[in-house]
Image (cartoon, rainbow, N blue to C red):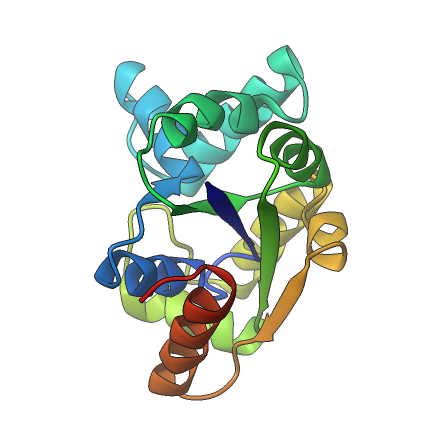
Amino acid sequence: MKVLGLVGLPASGKGECSAVAAELGVPVIVMGDIIRNYAESEGLPHTDQHLGSIARRLREERGMAALAELTVPAVSALQAPVAIIDGIRGDAEVELFRRVFSDFMLIAIDCPFSMRLARLRARKRSDDMVHEDDLRSRDERECGFGLKNAMDGADIHIENTGSLEAFRDEIRCILKTIGGVR
């Protein structure tokens, strides 16, 4: 199985990439769902503060690749020629995925801060922030997990600064070219 990982700062376009993949029949495993499941089991609302705290705690208790270790079984259970892992946050996760999945490629999605902030304000997800300082804090937290290192080491880099349709077209092309998706 070919496994494609997605890495990028909040609201860079990872979810949109996953949506395109799903439309093409590619299974998507969202690493953030693991954290949201932990929050639910602890009776916590899905706020950035709670989810960030859980992510930090898991990494402190189990190491920087903790979420990747929790993701591997779900990906391994898939019966598909290609799969997407959405939401990689650090280089330790990438290292683990490269060891476990012999055919792993990392896609980095980058987008300017101002565009990401506007997207967060528009999408209104429970863990989104609408203030610049909040987004800067989240970016710093996620970069502290090794996100920038992971992005720097990606196999493919996408600048998501154009229209939504142009981005979706680029994702379709990548999935068809490297993923063999029809």
